[in-house]
Image 1: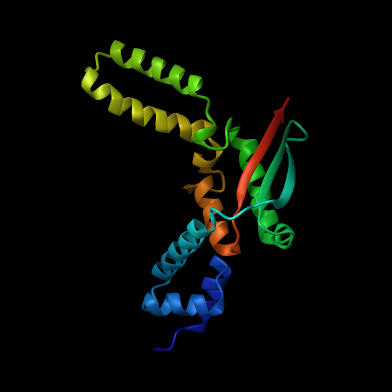
Image 2: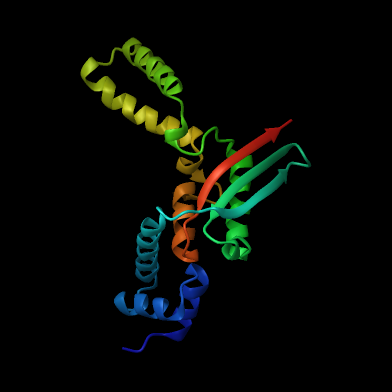
Length: 195
């Protein structure tokens, strides 16, 4: 079956996939563009999962200033090679994540970074509120789990809804970039300063 070359070009420009990958995805999806995009995203996530254990010791520090100098962000984002660190795609990702940090003010990178005493305090507050609301002990743990997930989604950078596409988390944006760029990418540090 012949695949529409305009669809291939459109798919390549949207996803960054190579010509053959775009063509195979369209063939597999029977020229259904949205399905082809989904196929490429799933392949990218598989690539990302394979690359997670690779050492990311190169990268860059991105500086972002917002609001006429009222908010500043320094972001350290790593990749595997200095070649990738110099690419426009990697720099764009770093810039967008720094903008996100300026807008959403996360406290931690991931939930594993949240100190145990902070989690314990949150649980204590939630439990007290739920008991005052008259919730049964048997459902409190389930409700607390949902409230903790919401808490992590507010304070952990990788779990926040991405500022430029709220249908994705920051972690999904990074995972998509790993699939597209082909190297492990890790956000290793950030600092947000505001007046």
